[in-house]
Amino acid sequence: MRSQVEGSQAVARAVTLCRPQVIAAYPISPQTHIVESLSDRVRTGELAGCEYLMVESEFGAMSACIGASGAGARAYTATSSQGLLFMAEALFNASGLGLPVVMTVANRAIGAPINIWNDHSDAMAMRDSGWIQLYAESNQEAVDLHVQAFRLAESLSVPVMVCMDGFVLTHAFEEVDLPTQEQVDAFLPPLVPRQLLDPDEPVTIGAMVGPEAFAEVKYLMHVKQMAALDEIPVIAREFEAAFGRSSGGLLRPYRLEDAETVVVALGSVLGTIQDVVDAMRDDGVSVGALGIGCFRPWPVGEVREALQNANRVVVVEKAFAVGAGGIVGQNVRDATRRQPVEVYDVVAGLGGRPITRASLRALLDDVLGGRVDPGRLHFMDLDLELVQRELERSRHGERPGPHAENMLRDLGTVASGAYE
Image 1 (tube, rainbow, N blue to C red):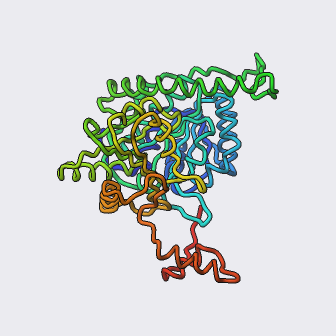
Image 2: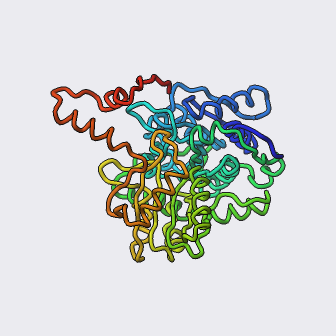
Image 3: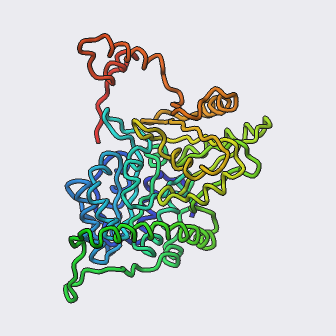
């Protein structure tokens, strides 16, 4: 059924249709509407047979999900930004124990300074926590990925996070095709847990493991992640057959057939990139786009094949490794290291800064014109004059003060408070 609905409400509806048995959540912008809606659905009986736990923190939410999943329940939570970092210890526990928890991450910037708007620094900070990471391009895909995420998590007994851009998607109203309960029930079978805490047959989950077997445990975690590279396309094909639309999968190629220049990105910015690709194609420029639908596990072989004909790859990402460079860019570089291709690392959209068609077109024109160095990290739309003033102040001021507040004063902006 097609409905004009807010992204958060659409995701809450999709999660409801997946029949979770335990939801443990702590609100943090911009995921709050998701867990509020789920709470109402449990209260009214629309989501029957589910226990909703309002916990004291995000760490508590993930810990409760670990306990529920270990006891054989289908468990779900959602978080954002600092909330995801507060879960960090428990995230590694969930993956190390091989528990099929599903979590929505409404991507939001990490402070300080405080910023409630979208970028990918939260999920990227947890990229090596052992969770599968799926990225939604649209609200329709966010809905579809949650249905597929439960199927994937439970088929391999691994935790899965579905990442959707905070505010850009969570608070946007779009027309979404919401599946029926019958469709989801046919696609997502009841949970049959791989491991189960049963008082009648007591076992230990999460025992101390010493040097004699710890490496082997970690190796098996890696094996299951690699198995997901085969499982994700199968689930995506079965989803398309059942629901009549293509959604999910590892990659989203766009006009790659003869593209000499390819833009790589994750999330909602792909729509804007595709508009720029179309405009440049109209001007006779051979450019294409490659969306990354699954960032962990990293589909190295599939990325290598998709980029085999490209001369240059421009990776546009909403996070970076401070002191090192691009995160997605380095993964792309690893995939193409045996190919004669230049990889450009471009950081854009940090803290919710708009990524416009004009800025992307100017970036690609600069790349094609040789005005961007592929060996250096490039920041799109960076206010260099503002940065230089602050650097000068730092060099000559005895107590220059914090960068954020100084630059806000330069801009004539008052520092704004924000809630988490």
